[in-house]
Length: 260
Ligand SMILES: [Zn+2]
Image 1 (tube, rainbow, N blue to C red):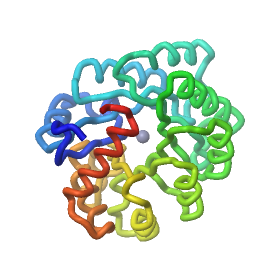
Image 2: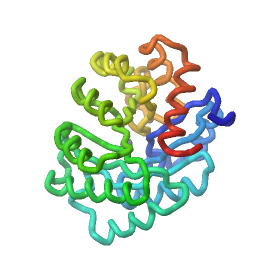
Image 3: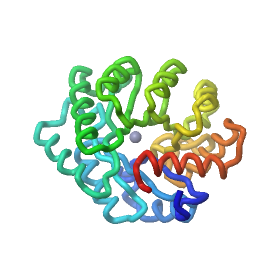
């Protein structure tokens, strides 16, 4: 790994384009840099948000963009919107497709619309040889069934919230697992156990900011520099030091998103 990333962490999933950051977005990014965050991957959640992600990535060197449509958008996205997404993905700071996937927990969009939107984005990723950022909530079986039709597929399951069987299936399929600060929550015993059995060479870190502030900060806006607290918790669970966690998770992110 290049010297510029040494000892640094990466926030592989956040939403700095959200209005929560309108009043101090620049400070948030500077604070991340001052706190040894090597880079931030800002994640598109809708067509409009994906446009903002790309604009932000163009503005700040340490910010990269993923463009995509969250399953919540499935009832809303138009064919014209999909063509715009296909154009947007060509920008040089776009390093992934997503977040995309299935969400049967909230079901804000109908499942029969979520699946084709997921498939369309897996196809875009394949066409452009980009990794996919996958959102999966209470849809493990369908997510796995669909993803297996697009193998070999470079994918990360973001904000992992599945059970041990799903974790093992993901690992066997070669997928990466990304954990958020929700592993620090008092009731997250199951999740902490899963972190313990996730091999370090498949693990990435994310804040999902503005959501999921770590324990002690709950109810407040999350932001990328808080990833330090997540790294500390992961190092405790993996019985190693924070330096190793930084080294490994950053190397994983750099290789996965092809930033070498
Ligand atoms: Zn997200």
